[in-house]
Image 1 (cartoon, rainbow, N blue to C red):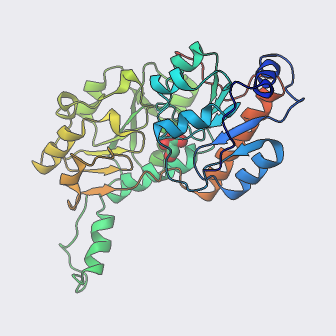
Image 2 (tube, rainbow, N blue to C red):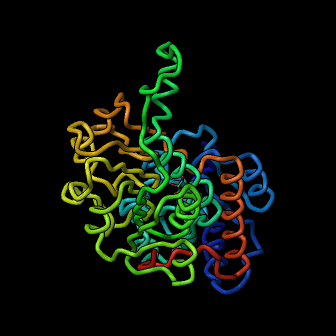
Length: 354
Ligand code: DGY
């Protein structure tokens, strides 16, 4: 990581802090220093460098807790991404120079938003721009698992295909099945539009119903009770953010509401599902399968599903398109620039709202 020497106590730095504390006016007298924790698309990095002074992480290896703190102490704005744990330790040690966290990514569950707000640090994310690509991946999993797509590929690779057979590789029809979407926000709605086009019936659970116009357009049925929805659907798609309220929302008890022919798809965050329970149920044949773009990094429970034919595991790649990543970079830049110019950044996270 390229880092200038830490100088939090010198005159230059305290002048800088003074100019940054002019909350409503442009901060144009000095160049703003932005710390970037991971390698970003080249175009994003270049554009950031045209506008601001950058301290980047050239290796692309995630920074340790100490390196994150050390970087934060040298910058006015930090642009972290998921995996950078901005927790109590971070905020207690980040110093007073840091004024903004412009997250490269939509999910902000790795940032303690309340601690940031208490330290008067503005936090932004990059919503919307990745929703359609993420929804494509959810739809790909909704199709891939019941239709045994990856299993089929493996059978070719293993030389098991000796010609078409009326009874070989039979999957489960997708059209006409009941999809239950947990979290009908931007990504959830984009999943619903795709699923509707594939002939699935749309059911959803949210804290409250979406507006009636959208509900009608998606022909979506709202379930206030998640338990009741789970009992009824054939495929579940997890599309809500990870918050304290959604941690293990799909608990063992709730997973047991699903019918044995049901599939679970998750492109959101691993924490929303009790993975131990999910693994047990798939291995015991009490669920038909799963498509998971996210799972716990320690692989403790998911390891058991690694070679199961009815499970498709992906390495958190739902938003991994060149276009999404460039647009995420654009949002980071827009948010920083708006804030620097004295305007509220468009993607500001307000504590208490998700
Ligand atoms: C995000 O931006 O939070 C996504 O999970 C990245 O795929």
